[in-house]
Image (cartoon, rainbow, N blue to C red; front, side):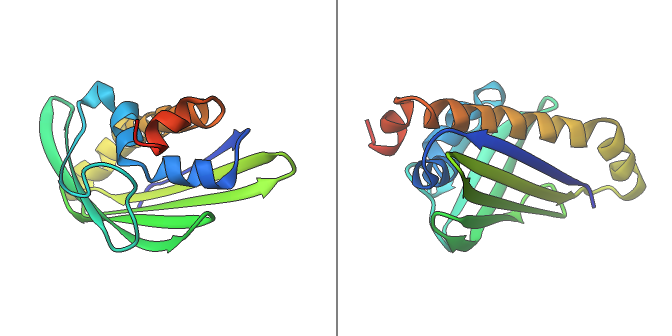
Length: 159
C-alpha cells in the first residue's frame, strides 16, 4: 500500500491550520483544477467527527465520486479521514498539527490501496502516487497561503 508523507511549516496558529485543513470551502479552492465539488454530506463549512462528505471530481478524464468520513478528531492537534465509498479499495489520511517554536508543523500521512490488482500497483508506481502527492502539496500550499495571510478569515468566518 503506497504511503505519502508530507511536512509543511506554517507561520500561523494551531487552530487556524487545523480548521483550514478540515474546511470544505478551502478544499474546493485547492482542487479547482479537477473541478472538485462537495455533493453530499457536509458540503460547506468545517467537517467534524463522524461526518461525511462526498466529492465529485474529474481525474484522468474520468468523473469520479469519493465519500470520506472523519473517523478520529482531536482539535487542534489531529484528525483522520477515511474513504467509505469510491474507486479506491481504501484511503487513510492522517492530519497532524504541532507547534514548534513560532511555527506550526503540519504533517500528512496519506495511505491508499488501489483497485485492479497488479495493474493498479503498476499504475501506482508509474503515475498515481506522484499525481496524488502533487495534489496534496498543492492543497498544503493553499492552506499555508491562507493561514499566513488574512485570507483565512474569508474561509473560516464564512464571508
